[in-house]
Length: 141
Image 1 (tube, rainbow, N blue to C red):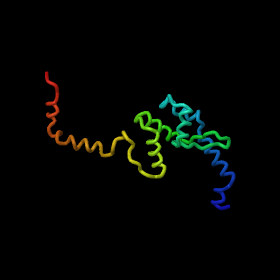
Image 2: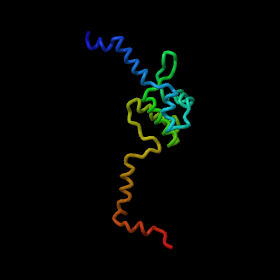
Image 3: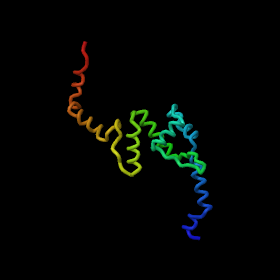
């Protein structure tokens, strides 16, 4: 038996599916994972995000959702951006779709730009030579 035949053997294939099955979480387990960081998230919210195409969990033969660790990470990202930056789902979905296509999307609105800190340093440079200038701005009674 060659390596390629062994890789396709039914026994190894069954073991591989069993490993995936064990690593996958049901929706209740996902809620347990997220509850500390997102106490108000519900199963219906997760299903809603699926309906909108932001996450696509695997399904069992009986139709139950099974979430991988990458699904949970993606959920965590979506919920964080929604909570912290108040971004609409359309913007989040477009960003994630670009990432899924292998593109490097622009930063989401509200994210710091890579050149941001250097532009502040450039702006402050003339004033760093005269630190007493800042003192002249203070209120004097």
